[in-house]
Length: 466
Image 1 (cartoon, one colour):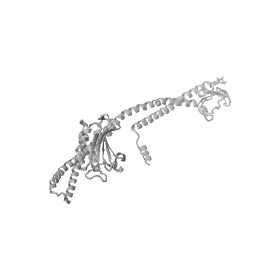
Image 2: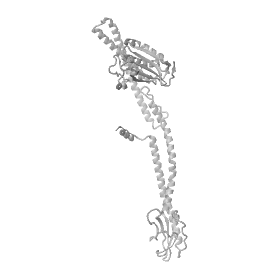
Image 3: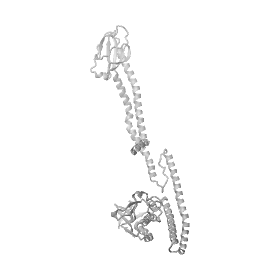
Image 4: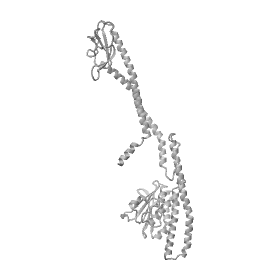
């Protein structure tokens, strides 16, 4: 069913511009060749018939003055009839007796009507004849009839018509080649526009260049540039709204945090009030973290900076990231280890690299079991530098693996305090600089359960072993 639907769509699609031009050019040349051959057949056929008829009449008139049949030289071969030779027949004055013939085997009787006529002596090739019967002047005068093969005339006209249409047919491949070259050269600008469109994403909606676009395609490119401008404005409005909302929320959340700190000494260390106070404090902490992550996400969705970034020592950056999260690791009783097998420089802003690895390590610390470890490894896989963040958590259900990068998505049974934005922010920051994040569950042989978050660094960066 699906294959049939695809086939119907394929048949329903319009042909390519190049294919349509080549098809119409081929059709035009074939029509031109056919019209040329037909016009040549008509014009040259009339010319040949008129010329041959005049010759037949002159030959017949040259013999009508004879009272006795002269000696006629017979045609040497029957093939001469196919080459247009005239057959001369001399009949008695009453038309009943054939007195002489240049080809006696010819079975064309004397025609009752004088002048030109067409005679059929049978079916097949060589049975159609053009006949001229000279009118008798006196009763005792010989009757003269000249016969010529009509197939010869027809074949001669057809050959001439084909010869007239041959130059157009011979020029057809050359014309097709020239058109192919012209269309290919003209379509380069379209392919360049297509490459520019493919390079666009939600963070870099730059206008398409119209410097080398054909005039016929200019309205389409201008309309597309207008659409990109509206998209840029919509994305910018969305980012400004998120940033403004997050900034506006920071102040009241900071004020609430200060009020909680001021209230802390007045709350008993146990009992229902202490429990409610702890829940309030956790909610405010989660709200503050959510606001910070919204700001971070909006920054990652902004167009990338065009300024060149200084190379960053990735091993040193990973150590700093682990150090900044040691408070959370200590709270959960998790040991964080780092293994750097490479000295790797990355051409990206350090703040955005920290955004990638801070969120991955923070996510691992929140999901790993208490009393276990989170391992961070900088090494090479098949000659490509990667960073692995390995936890000892419950893993990710296989049916939810494709949704973990969705915003605000949290797997069932997730640890409290999360917002579902960490992996989305890490993925956006990684994509800005040619990196890719892949998640997989650890197998039992690897010491699972748990999750391995692997960051593939740009392949063009050099790898130097320690």
